Length: 274
Image (cartoon, rainbow, N blue to C red):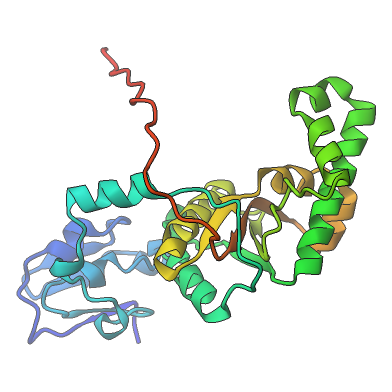
């Protein structure tokens, strides 16, 4: 199969595929869409050409209309529904003492993999710790890192309140991983310039997908800091060579429910005037 094929019986030559192609490698001719010179080299396999065609006439080499999710107008969020969904999302720090159902979590991950990535490279990989003893071990590595920082860089440790976190840990209170049953890391190869943004976006998609499946999450900031600085934790993660972790989420079944969404600051906007 070439880069794409057209069902000319369905194609109405509306030119939408050429108009919407990010790489601008489709040209409209009298007979219909055709590839421009060196199109195979510049195609990013994003599937916009397939998605935009209302007739289902466009077939990309790697994506056909049949494998795409049909857009259902009755499922598109109204403005008030989108606002309610986004405003009501809460970071979950109190979890039930039961494992995360694997089928629900992987469903959420499949949604997260739809997050946009630079040039559609899709570099994001996932590392999941779903055993409580492993999550606790990761938290202990973070505490070891905090003790090191406290000793070598006390001013930094003081600014980040490491002394209180260590003290609470010694009393059996885990403010690192919040006794979450699961931790998920997003990482990618260092060869991708957009790796950090791609991982952050995918993690954001994941945290937004989880509530609809009865799950909750919270960004594990201390874990992510330590992962880049503490050898003990990096050894625990065992990431492939030349790969970096760009974020981590605690995941679990929420033990609590919220009755309202707290107010947040209004947007701080400056419109540029040339």
